[in-house]
Image (cartoon, rainbow, N blue to C red):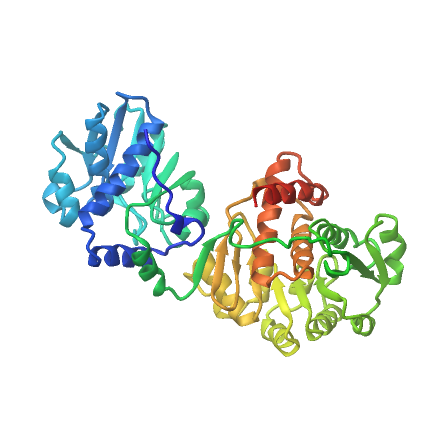
Length: 507
């Protein structure tokens, strides 16, 4: 048995549905017949099915009226030739099939039944009904079929995407198949990684169907942004040399809130130190110094009562990365601190209270960032995002999560990390990445504060803001995956050395 070959083009770059259409069209225009591509796609599906089902197993293949169904016909034929018992059902009329799908259907010589709401016994269902380009909600017979598949309890191998999933947004179009595994072609689509699509896809496999590098380049040439899956290789972590010392590794400054509101900043500072910043200082009101001193050792302390104190502190240019927000408090005083930090022209991470303090005033924040030429990263969760970007095009109806984050980045003039189970990182220059490397165990108090500290620590070491944000999100997710159940935020910084060690061993 051979596995679908993973295309090197697909290692990080994602293709929108329209970009995938351009890839197919370019491959065909370059001399590769569409039926050849369909044969390769069907072969990849059949190979994965053979890995999931013992020889001579029973496979139910559900085909739709388009090219996705054509892929299913090819897979059914190849499985039948490999001595599997194949039951093929078509949604719609055979006479209505067109183009390559019709040719693939002609090559199928076995019986072809109509779809039924009663799913027959099988070891595997191949869902080749609708692909990533579905642009309407399922209804009627199609919806009833999906309901029956989900009720059956039979493992499902989805072709391209589970039927009912929007390939660009990951949205469920009325109802969607809950797949066990999904095989897609050339590259992943955004809907494979954005929720709830990611949950419906389960295990993902990318197959190279022979479109070629030139066609892939033609597909992405028409994209308005470069969209990636977040993973090592998209970014590189700083490397130490024999000449490295604490001053060459950067100095991160984390602002703390007043007494009894210092924990969030300490979590962030610990994250910055663990990820490699050479020095980390926490600045807090004098009333909170003793509280912080009781909890910190390697992290230094400085008093800071207001924006003027911060301005004086930033006369030291060695403080090259700043983090404001966790536990800082909301209101004009925080706005003043952010203005000073942004106008200092350093690398800057803004989270939590620093974002909420600019509720509906993101243009003011953007002006501070622009005027100070700060290399800024904003790390909002959905609630903070809605408050900060209220009234802007970033919260317009009908946008995908990627589109919302990308528009927000353009408005703010900063990298935006829109957090969640499917965190999106977007830069003003059009780069964007979707992170699927994480765990629900990260949904605990203080987890986001550690993430902000990781970003700040990487910025202190000189990483580009987009790469620092992407790397921090992945490291944060990997730490959560390693710890698993019982995770609390204090555990995350302590997992970072193991994460970094394994990445170094892989390099």
